[in-house]
Image (tube, rainbow, N blue to C red; front, side, top):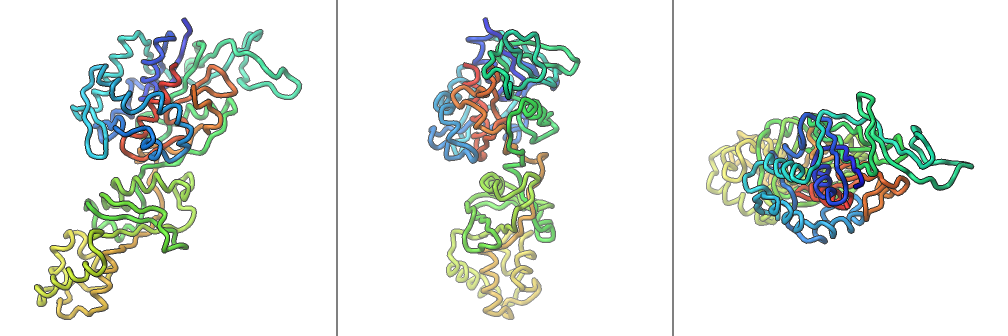
Length: 434
C-alpha cells in the first residue's frame, strides 16, 4: 500500500488522514503536543463546523478564488460533511444563519470525533514532531536536496520516485505522497507560524502575503473607548472610501461591538473579510476609509425626526441626556450628543431645530475612521497563502510536483464567518485524500 505523510494536525490534516486510509498507509505529523489546537478555539470554543447551505451559496461566501473550489465543494458538500460527522458519532445542530455546531456546544467533541475516527482507521499520529523541510527524490537520483525542477539544458521531465520530510532532529521520513496542512498564521498561540508556507516557498511555489481577515477594525479611541463593551443589535454598518463618500464599499445589517481600540462583532468581521483588497498585508488602509453606523436603520430620516420630536415634547424641561434615554444605550448618549454638537446638560426646550437635525443625521450616519485592522492574534483566519494557480483544483496536487498536495488555510482561499472556512478545510482535505 502506498504511504502518505500529512504535515499538520488541524482540521484539514485530520480530515485528510481519515479519508486517505482507504488508499494509503497514513502518518500524521503535528508539532504541538495535541491535535486541533486552533479548532479548539473556533466559534468561541463551540466550533461552527460548517454551514448547512447548498454548494452555490457556499461559493458566494468565499471571498478569494471561489471558482477554484468548484470541484472540492461538489465532491464534499456541507451536507456530506454533516453526514460524515453524524456517521462518526457526533451529534450536531443547526442554528441561525445555517451555522452548524456540535450539539454539546463543545469544540472538544469535534476534535475527539476526528481523533477517534483516525484511530479506528489506523492512522499513525506523531505529536511534538516538527517538519523543517520537504524534498523529492527523482528516479535515478540517490538524493535531490535542491528540491527544484531542472532548468536550462537539463532534462525537461523527471519522475519523482518518492518524497521525504526532514524533521527538526535531522531525521527523515519518506512517502509516496506528502500533504501539507500546516494552516496560516492567525492565532499564533496555537502554534500557527507560517512555517509550512516557507517550506513550500523554498520549493519555488508562489504565494500571496498573508494578511489578517475576519478581524476587528482599529478606529478613533476617543470615540470608541467611552462605549467600550457596548453591543449593538439591529444596526447597519457601511464602509466608504473617503474619496468616494457616496458609494459604499460594504453595507450590511446586524450586530457589532465597541472596544477600547475600535469596533468588532459580526458586522465588522464580515466587513474586513469583504474589503481585503483595501488593506495592506500589515492591515493598514491603502487609502482613507470611513465606517458609518446607522443606529436606527428601521426608521427613515423623517420617521426618526418625528420620534425624537415626540420624545422631546414629553421631556421639555429635562436635559438632552435624559431626553434620549429611551432612544439610545446609556454608554452611547454622551458620545452621540457630542458628535451632534448638543451639550448633554442643555434643556430640551432650548435645543434648536438645527441641533435636532444634526442629532438625526448623527444617528443615521455616525462616522468613525477606519485606521487599520487588528493583528493576527485576533484574526479568525489568514487571507493569502499558496497561489491557487500552482494547484490542480481536482486533486489539490502541486502541478509541478506530483505527489505533493496542499490543503486548507495554506491555500489562498478564505471565506466569511458562518462555518465556510472550515468547510474549505474539509472539502480540500477530501480531494487530497483520494
